[in-house]
Image 1 (cartoon, rainbow, N blue to C red):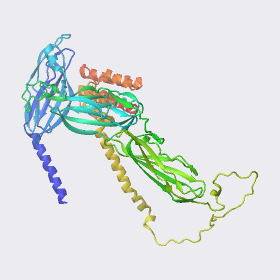
Image 2: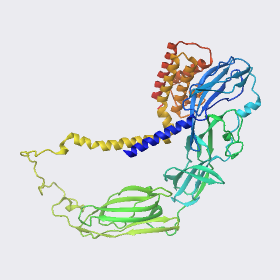
Image 3: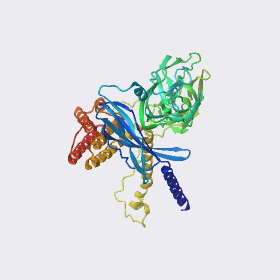
Image 4: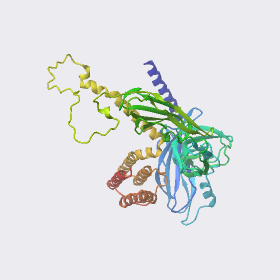
Length: 615
């Protein structure tokens, strides 16, 4: 109990400390993505509140030069030197109404009873068809300077091997101080190789030429199935680099110095994350595969390559003629365990043999495939007097010593006695019966007749196991285990599989967004309603198709859904809704509250239709 109280007190202290950190050094700044725009274009205004836990929605004064549309909010939390800092950004889309120079702001926000204001921003609106100055465009379109901060590599541990000798293929992704999303790994084509997974994905850090890289490593065991020079095609990785869009404020010196030069990533003034798609590719690899040597090849060699041992057991040691004997042969070692051939058993005269059953057990996949393959072979002695089961022989090629090795186990002593007279297996030697019909004779009666009446049965006392509730209670631990295991597996998949997480949560997020749109409809905020509805529907389609939600237009959505084979009528219905949302945000339209709610209900119906096909 004391321990629990201490834990609760610690949590309360952390919460209070975090709240105190949030309340310190409140700042309120405004930024735009460009300060020069043409008629027909738009400007994104971002108002960022830093140091306040729950800031109110900022108040933006009206401007005669722009129509203002709400663009949503985002929150960020950072820990620097043990202190927690929170920031909340409010985005607005400014649509110019006429040419000229206009001042936006100052905006006002209230935090803990104190008012904060931004500095006003001047924006120049050019006449339609007139392009903004080249300098501003160059700043906004600043190239993504990656340098050596992200690259991929594909290697093999050896490029000259024998047929069926293991090669370890290693793919590595190197990244230095970058955040990635939407990773799509396309492994190389390994034609003429048998693949086996080796270990799990590794994540570690390594210093390369003085730079610290976070590395993701994947390993695959390859066993060549053909000789000659075989090419392993390049591996590719598609991903999105997450950076924050640049905010226009004066530069200040970074406390970490000019570590990466004048790179886009080093600009310390950002507001929201932007995804930049990147495709990386490795170089092809050529592997020379030599045939196995003919010199010294044993007659019992069947293609095994690696390093092995063998264990053999024969049971039972004393049988009657016609009764089965099980010969268990276990081959243990490193190599292509799944394709190991059965050990040979020469000179099986006097035994009837059956095809063995085999079982593979891979025990280690760290660097090389290590495991065992167990063969269970049934042998039936056809006559009495046999005294041994012949030896088992397993031959393999050792690539380290470049020589063949043969393991011999046995022979194994057994005693085969005659079958009793009149038994079914007495004539197992296969002698044909004489021609003609024979009279059927009963040789032995060894079956007891069924007792017609069990007699009187008395119940003595009561047993706990006879209680149905007791038996049901035994299922509770199993059900708890199964439920816990399933929950943990689902959480792990949510954490590691971004596509699965987005697809699973897409419907719930879309319904939540449409719920917010209904609230805007009730309050008569028509432009805000269209903006929220557009993001809800566009975000739903993007999540279901696992593509970036930013920039999801009606045409983009139409192309993606058509590529997935979605019904053309449903695609057109979705496209029409997104176009209506765009018109509602940036055109002069007017609907009453009831019409706006009806529009949201139509979107909800479309999402439900999409949910049935976008699985």
